[in-house]
Image (cartoon, rainbow, N blue to C red; front, side, top):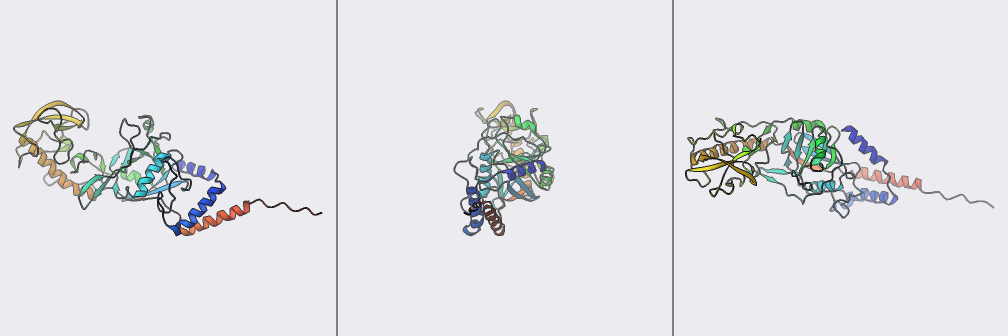
Length: 381
């Protein structure tokens, strides 16, 4: 990754800047501490030119963004000449502060860490998705090498990236061939890669069973700084590690509605039910939350839009005990998970200080003065 950074920096140093751009840069550097921040991409940085894919020529080159995380800073070098639409999209989230207070919600060994999508509100004890802008066009080109940063998107939908991004923990060149490739728009630079590796090695929590939230199905590989403990006495009859599977990893049991035409929504989350056939109903305290008579059909499902009736029957008492055991585990684990999240406290584009701006401006004026053509000596008659 240091080779990538050096190559980008050397390319930036070789770039020639016209006289009009030098004057504009001088004005921006010298006057921005006086005028304050305008409606730009970040504090003290001029706004982008019209058009979502037009890169502002006044942005620093190389352009770096720092993520202040609970495990240390991660500095990203962004590549607007390779993925201008994506860089502008990313900077819009930075400038609006929507990445501040988010957390890294996914890690996969020897693959990626992923962030940029979710925040936790300790006052409401609620996990929620951040406000997302419309999707940005895919801009494949650079390879998914170790330490590069790319946009996450919906599988099969090429132009579906919004706010979520990931850092490659290894050379994931196969991603260059998936659905026209993923947009790589920067790389981790400096001494930040060990921080990324440290996050990637953290313990993970099975989110579908730990978070009492409509988003719980998303956090299947949630990294936490301290592995939470199980409730006193264990998880009860609902043991996530013993959930029945169909042979395809990740499929959960879900209730079929009484009409047999779809799935019963989870009253807590509105999502797919998670049930366990290890619950026989002997420990049920109250009736189930869903309408129930004597038994309910249970199907296996990956999501609400793709299910099939490989149904079995589960008694109302067994469903109730499964619900109660799951709720006990979620309510015990959620505060522990929230307190151990890998948080992103702030994301910012570093700006030059007043003294640095003045020094650069004076240096450029001195350079321009020396470069001005001298008049030819007069000939004496």
